Structure formats: structure tokens, C-alpha cells
Length: 173
Length: 285
Ligand SMILES: Cc1cc2nc3c(=O)[nH]c(=O)nc-3n(C[C@H](O)[C@H](O)[C@H](O)COP(=O)(O)OP(=O)(O)OC[C@H]3O[C@@H](n4cnc5c(N)ncnc54)[C@H](O)[C@@H]3O)c2cc1C
Image (cartoon, rainbow over all chains, first blue to last red; front, side, top):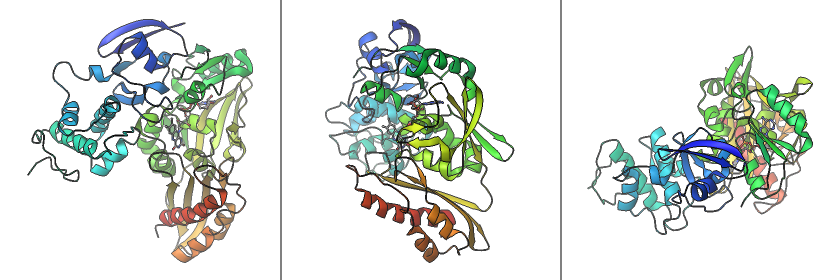
């Protein structure tokens, strides 16, 4: 057993973990943060994406011991109270269907927009290439991300507007 | 899936990491970003007794200049390599190829040294290191030694590193001035791994190609140099016809694998096409 301390969604947890324990299992089974789903278990799908120090990582491909001393954000800690603009945009633009990929998709988006507040459609598709969705065909996810980006830049897109994905102005007709 | 049990240490210096490896014997393994090793452990394709995690060894991170060489620390993450100003200036081919590796989440964890030490012939950075004549510096119980990239990649997933050695840094001769570079990769959309990739660097003088380096990804059990292409390029004029003619040699001396992504003759075809594109882009034609 190895002692690890990490701050998850604002709360510091100290635990003894087996070195082989994956971060994703630690979050779900150890800390009860079950908002992080396990998708493919092969590092490909990105459903288990969380933020470590604000950067997206696939939590199935990180050992809990590697997260010692780190600050982790799961979908459950992205905002307290009101939804994060990215969460709102996914709801408004139907950026999900079954919802399984959504926590990872949203956290990957938060990271993407931090580095690139005004992405093009192409950059959104490229930036989310590590997150697979089997329902939506990605169209509405891209719309949601572009809309969230506009809102976070202070451009206030019309709630619920279904803009074309290539309209980067954030202004709906 | 859950890996088999192992012990875990996280030393803070290369010397301590080497000591931990030699103490543990052959079954110990270095853990860098874990983006190749953790999937392998999860599938129980490997049963190390101890993982020696390098995450606290800060001397292994970062990029610096040393005379005519650019030195990239083994634990420098792909995400940091891509944005590093020195890498962009003196080894733009490395930054370009690293930008095609996997996806942002994997690039936040995976390291330059880890990608080379893993030695997957489908990995993008090995062909680049080979094309740029990189020197890989390893430290073991007997001290440090430098291994030329041409000698480092031994076979599929096998390198010249011994089990008690840590890859410390990678030294690349600086390329700037008349050098143009390009990495051309062909992959399926939802899968980042290259079916074939081509790393090209060419130096021009007065409209002629005076020097050329071409490395191939996934055309053998190790990365390979397209030596016949390089020879055909040297001294030719930098135009589309001459480059296309030289690129016809791209598959010579390769031993391309056949798998679900493509048969070997298809890969040979890709190598020729992608070499033409990579060299043309590098030469700016
Ligand atoms: C979904 C996915 C897609 C990917 N797509 C691509 C791609 O398109 N192109 C590509 O090139 N790669 C790809 N990769 C692999 C990625 O580049 C990994 O980051 C890299 O192969 C391993 O780096 P790491 O730091 O994670 O090493 P680890 O996984 O920690 O280690 C890999 C191996 O190298 C050894 N090792 C690592 N560092 C050292 C060292 N300093 N000294 C001695 N031994 C060491 C380890 O013991 C282990 O055997 C992908 C990975 C994933 C999960």
C-alpha cells in the first residue's frame, strides 16, 4: 500500500492505495465520485477523462499513485450550483444522446477552450479527437462547443439557438 | 481491467532510479507517462515486480541548448515538446510529429523519452529521431553512454537499453537555415496510429537539394531510413519531377508488416506516395 493525498473536486483525500489501482477506480470505488464513467478500458474512448491540474487526462491510464499531490476535477466538481457554460451548451444544443461520453467530452472541452478560446470548427473536431461518441455523429457536440466558446468570450449566444457549426460569430439569426 | 500487483517507488534523481532498477533486477520497469505501459499492464501483457516512476525526477524534464545540439529531457511531455520555442526553432520536425501523436489527453501524459523507449514501429517520434541522427543518452550503474538512434531501435518494441538503464535525454543536431522539414502521416480517422508515416528534412542551396534525411514509420519492425531516396535526392534540383522520381525508391530495403490496417504491398505504395508529399512539403514545392 502507498499513501496518497489528492484534492478531488475541492476536497482533500488521504488514502492508502495499492500501486496498481487505476485513478479511475480510485475515484469511483475509493472516493465514490461515480460521475466519471469507465468506457472502453483501452485508453481510446476518453469517457473517463478528468482534469489533473486543469489538463485533460484519461483516468484509466493514470495510476492513483501518480496523482499523489495533484488537484483533480471531475464532472461533479466542474461547478458548484449553476452549471458551467460548457454543460449548459451541451444541454441546449443536444450535444449528447445516451450521455455516456458526456462527462469526458465536457472536461476535454473545458481544457480545449482554456488553451484556445476561439476555436474553429476544425480545431474543435481535432481537439476532441481523443473522445469518442457513438450516438450524436458529433454535429451537435461541435455546435455546443462553439456556442460555449462564444458565451465564455462574453458574446452571449441566444439560448437554445441551433447555429450552423461553421458560424463562429456566436450571433444567431 | 486491473493490472497484476507490483511494488512502486518514485525516486527523485536519476542515480536513485538506476539504483532502484538494479536492486530490483530484470523484472523492474521504468514508468514515464504510462500511456503505453499502463495499457500493457491492464491487459496483463507484462508483469513487472516493481515500477520505478520517474515523475519526481525533475532533471529529466525540459529542453535546452548545448552548442550545436538541442537536448530534450526524456520526461518532457509531448504537450511541452510541441510548444517549446527551442524545439520549434531547431527541431521543428519533432514538434510537428509530436503534434500528430494520439490526442490532447494522451499528449498531456506521454513523454518524448517514453515514446522512444517503447520503440513501437508505428510510433511517430522514432522515425523522426532516426532521420535527425539523434543520440540517445542512457544512464546505468556503470555511468552514462550515448547511443546513436540507428543502433537504439533493435526490433519490435526492443531497444538497446538494458533493464537497469534509464533513458536520460535525447540530443539532436540543430537544424535551421536552409533546412525544410515535414512529417506526413497516414492514419484512419478515429485511430491516431500511423499506417505509414514519413519524416523528411531537406537542405537546399540555389534551387538544388544538397542534403536529405528521410525516416519511415511502420515500414519494418523498427523505424528505418529511406537511404535510397536520400541518395537520389542529393544533388537533384528541388522540383516536383525530381522529387517524385526519388520517392519511387521509398520502399527499398523495407520489410513492411501486414495487418488489419493494410497489407505490406499497400504500405509500400503508401511509403512512395507519402515520401513524395513529405519531401515536396519540406522542400517547399
Ligand atoms: C490512445 C493512444 C493513442 C496513441 N497514439 C499514438 C500515435 O499516434 N503515435 C505515437 O507515436 N504514439 C502514440 N501513442 C503512444 C504515446 O506516444 C505514448 O506516450 C508513448 O508511446 C509512451 O510514452 P510514455 O511516457 O507514456 O511511456 P510509458 O508508457 O510510461 O513507458 C513506455 C515504455 O518505455 C519505457 N520507458 C519510458 N521512459 C523510459 C526512460 N526514461 N528510460 C527507460 N525506459 C523508459 C517503459 O519502461 C515502458 O516499457 C498512443 C497512446 C495511446 C494511449
